[in-house]
Length: 588
Image 1: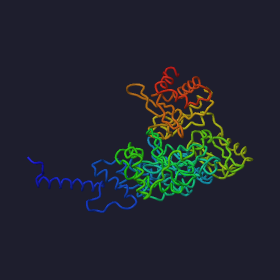
Image 2: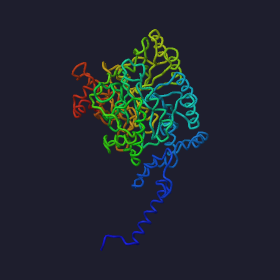
Image 3: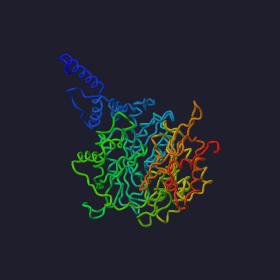
Image 4: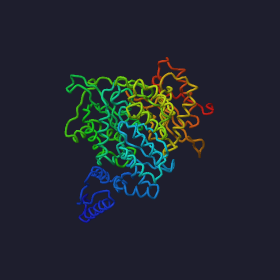
């Protein structure tokens, strides 16, 4: 019997295939045969979706929602929901994140709104206006985030539109700060005022920011996307945790390119998936950063996974293609070659200072200073926001600079006015100094305000500080990052000590909030992903467990000069687990 199909069998198979294609087209999975192909700013995304469905794969639910109704085409419905004061269904909860709104039930029966503040810099009058919005439309406070940004919480549905339109009236934005979009662009906190910086990142972050706002094709990516600019200043920007990291470098003579300051291009940072941005060997002229970013993201749009949300970040495209092949695709978009140089062409980055985001520091401008203000785990009441605005206006240059360390800087304070400015800051309930523990203590919102959180993170971080400070005589800075879930907004993997929320079983049928604990994480020139050393630590035990860990370090370090990071690096994983082991009954 031959292997050829009969005429009737061929006609049946052709008809069956045509029926499947027609059904997919009717569901919006494919353009109808012979019909118009996707066009307009969303065409690149529709075509990418079509390639997956044509291969017989099922789009992720969020991809279907985007296709059924693009969020920016649904503003009338958002306004109607606000008028009716009703919460969104899941599809709209996803769509409204394009406007910066996250409905966070069951943690809170309200929205959270995340802003866009390019390079983390806002004016005193903008901070004043945000305080009024926080009072009138939200919970009367805001949080500084780990993307040098602000978010507001406890926003009733009826106030959502008033809030985002109020933000825009201040010359600020929330557009695209959530969902499958390019998040707030970060840059050096001391850009333009840092004595050691190689370049002022503000104009490049701002150019990229406005490019995003005005290019609809850059919305609706396979997943969220982060871009950061490091200018070589004192305060770490954590750019190596971003999908695209532009790192200012000084290129020396004799390498076939113009000597001077360029951006080194690193790609694929996503520390929640245990990867830092890796150097590509490419350098970019600063005024070409936006063009290169656009090309990179368009390649990501075309090739990012639209079916598996866990594998849809840029890292996985790079893993699949390899860096060389990916960069060739970027060059095709640019219609030119990228500039490659050997590693030795760049001079070493100026040293970072882990405490430069706290206290008084001289600027490059003679006679002026920035003052790093320590917040209580990023929280600002509306009255404190107004107070800081007044201080920036009266004592500084009028700018307020947010940092990735969940605090802020007041810049442009004259030498003669530092004491008065400091007194005003303290009167608001803040400090300009910090213990070695508090200076590097970071926490996300956690279970108090996030439905994914498996522990109360800010509360636990504060409990750790209050418990450990009087009991542990730390004499060197230490970073403790407390995050509530696998999204790792507080980036626990890069802390000296990192805690990630987890449900801790206490019986066969019950569990409580708690943490898994990692040590040995780092960023910058010592970057490393932390090693898990403890599992299932109950939330109530965390302060005493951290006390014990710090005590072991101080007792067993090789010398007073040995940092916690160095201490953990001279022990292997098994030794670390043994060193930091604890029995719950002994921590009471």
